[in-house]
Image 1 (cartoon, helix red, strand yellow):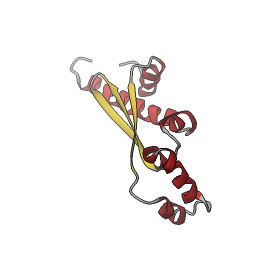
Image 2 (tube, one colour):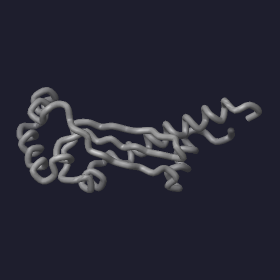
Image 3 (cartoon, rainbow, N blue to C red):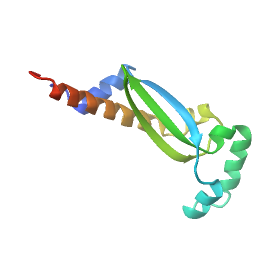
Length: 121
């Protein structure tokens, strides 16, 4: 195979070959715990609670992104998220492109391994 994993991942993303799904999953620890444990600014938990009033699921969650390409499935997860909605996360979080890149890299790596495994490649 002449293409590198990075080239394959770029090709997959540039041509929208991967279908991505974003879902909010329950966050294990409370916003107050995160505020105290991670030394977040005072008022963090209060702001999270306000977001939860707007959208309970996206107000305090972990975000799971699943990417699928012809039955090959990979995911990327980030916890401790607080957004007004799914759209707010997608448009304003700054994490979406990184999550998609991580998934594309994993799929490309699997593709390279499968190609290398195939006899006479």
